[in-house]
Amino acid sequence: MDSQDCVLLKYGELSLKGRNRGRFERELLRNVQVALAGVPGAVQIERRDSVLVLLPGTAARQELVERARHLMGISVVQPAVRVRKTPGAAADAAVELLKDHAGPQRFAVRARRRDKDFALTSEQLAAEVGERVGNELGWPVDLDDPQVEISVEVDRHEVFVSVERHRGQGGLPVGCSGRGLVLLSGGFDSPVAAYRAMRRGLRCEFIHFTGAPLTGPSSTYKAYAHVRQLDRFQGRSRLHVVPIGAAQQELARAGAGRLQTIAHRRLMIRTAEALARRLGAQALITGDSLGQVASQTLSNLTTIDQAATLPLLRPLLTWDKQEIIDEARRIGTAEISPLPDEDCCSLLTPPHPATHTTDAELTELEARIDLGTLIPAVLAKARTFTPPHAA
Image (cartoon, rainbow, N blue to C red; front, side):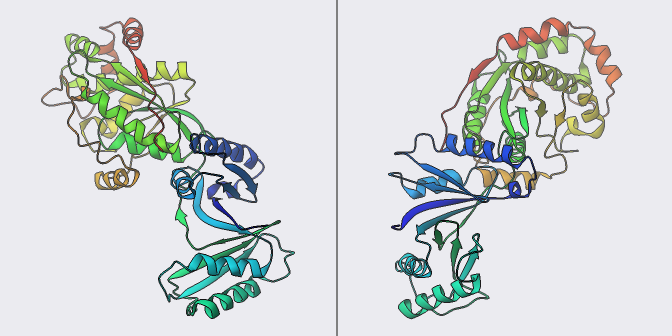
């Protein structure tokens, strides 16, 4: 076997699954295939024990690395070289990989045998490879604090050698936990909540409420940009844009007063739930953080919950604002969130919104309008967008 470039995708939490692990692996494989769509040439995907091997064909290996790093369910993305199953071939590959590194550098060899019938133990293999590197390149061994780590992994039919590794997203493959509908605003919180939901295996659809016809399209542009950025983590994302400004006016005319904000939130929840049922989504997801604003007091969150029949998930409930912003920077949505827009949640906001509400008083208010007619009318004006996959 000639040496061949490849990329190793190593499982994270997925490797701990029991009898239903096969289902999780099939979902991960589908996600890998979606992520690699459009890559030049045919990329071959081979399965090993807790590892997927990508053989790039004519594609650039670095492009595979960049796409794979966004995959949920993968803990490590490792560019490697596949060689014959001999200590000599492994040592040759290690020396070749290090020739372009500035040296000398302190190094260590970490060997692992997934095939326990290999002639050498892991320690013996690491010593043989390390001796070759030291003799040919003059690099010193440092097992405690190396500047470069050489990974040598013995599999059933080959050996994989690598000198770099990248952290993956971890978590569970998108889709293995079901489907959710994210209420996506233009701020920092809801895109991060969507990311955390994806990381727990939920495939996410997105609904964004605009203040149209009372506002312009700026918030839609932001929502679209957020979805395009988040699409790197799941692929095939859809954004459903729903104008709700006229319905907000109906609430105000019904005398919502200090209850306007919570009544508006309950209307969004009911509308999102109606759409979720059409889409086959099993839960709603919001970016609520306990106590962050008036609508997110425990009392108000409880009142909002009572408008829903589907589970209402809040991945960021106990996060503070700085934690959310830091995560937004890490996943690439932080630059979008501060852009100016006309947020529907700021429309008709009372000077002193209620911080303590009950289901009974909201139900009394909602009885003054025809929700059974209003919600279908709002949804009838929804538009759906499918951003191109952002690799």
